[in-house]
Image 1: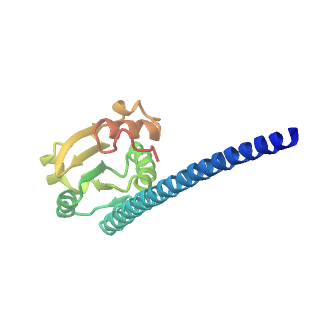
Image 2: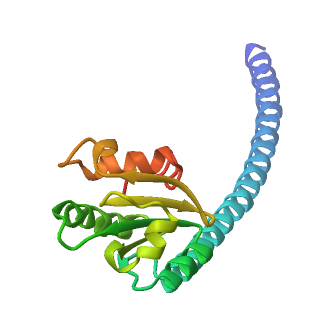
Image 3: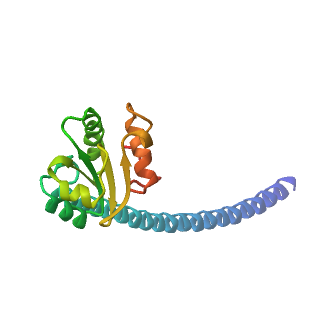
Length: 193
């Protein structure tokens, strides 16, 4: 008789375990379905993020190509006052160095501007010989050499006259970047090159 009771109890336990197993299998399937849906949603969301980022990169690349075609990305000497006005009209950000060949400070500033022109192609870095552009210097009130004029949207925002604002004769490139950030030719969050 004990054997029948034991078998009966074992059978009932087995049935309960089978029912529990079915419940667990059902819950597992629900989680798997939910997990697939989440991954599918995430895949779609990630794909959207990837496509958006790719489009941003393409837009930036196209903008960089446009800027390079306008003379950005290099430090150019301009030879006429008309060219100066054309550049200021067509470029959003212009950094113009009014120089004289016989001034060593102009050569020092040139070395910094050559480097920055490659790092910040959204700014058109140019220089013009002040001695050969008297009308322009008179009109823009350039009285000290070197003068670095910061121009945004065709309007003079600021002029750096001499090197005092940059920290003196042996100023660092970073000091110049900081002044360009102060006058918003370079954004505060932009990498320093």
